[in-house]
Structures are given as structure tokens and as C-alpha cells.
Length: 109
Image 1: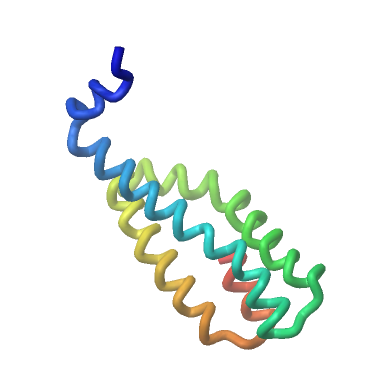
Image 2 (image 1 turned 135 degrees about the vertical axis):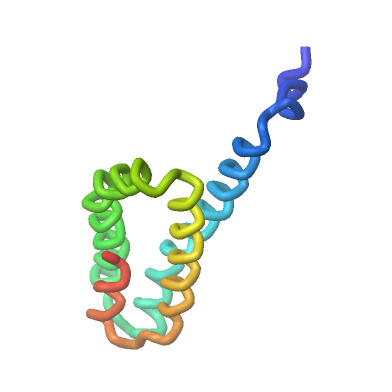
């Protein structure tokens, strides 16, 4: 019995959402490396670098209910596109910020 046999028959929308989710989750891996950037390049303590990741998690926790409502209003696919583009822009902006408190703010957003 082959468990992969049914994958070919999945609808196109499922494939698109799955690929977008994979890209999005791969992008969030960068957040972990943000601690290295903060601790080594900005020469902050490990505690302050860890706080950046904690603030990122807090922002995600607080925004989750609002994003759910937004998804109902504009649609899942549209929200996924906005999320992917927005995440890419925010991660690109991180490379230009050298102030610890701006990094905290951007991580929360």
C-alpha cells in the first residue's frame, strides 16, 4: 500500500496553500538567526537577543485573532499573499537596522 498515491489527486488550491506555507515557514527560520545578528553584530547580550525572539512570539500571539478575522474578510489566499510579501519586506529591512529598540519594534510587528 503506497501512502503517497493520493497526493496527485489533490486540488490545485491545496498545492498552492501548501507551497506558500512551506515558503512562509522556511522564512520564519530566519527569526532564529536574528538572535545571532543581535548578539554578534549589535553586540547585545544573549538575554537581550532572546528578548527579540520573545517579542516576535508575543506579536504573533496578539495578532492571531485579528488575522483570523481579516482572513474572513479578504480571503485566505489574499491574506497568504500579503503575509508572504510582508514577511519578505520585514526580513529585508532587518538587515538595515542597527538600533536594538527598532529591531524589537519590527519583531513585534
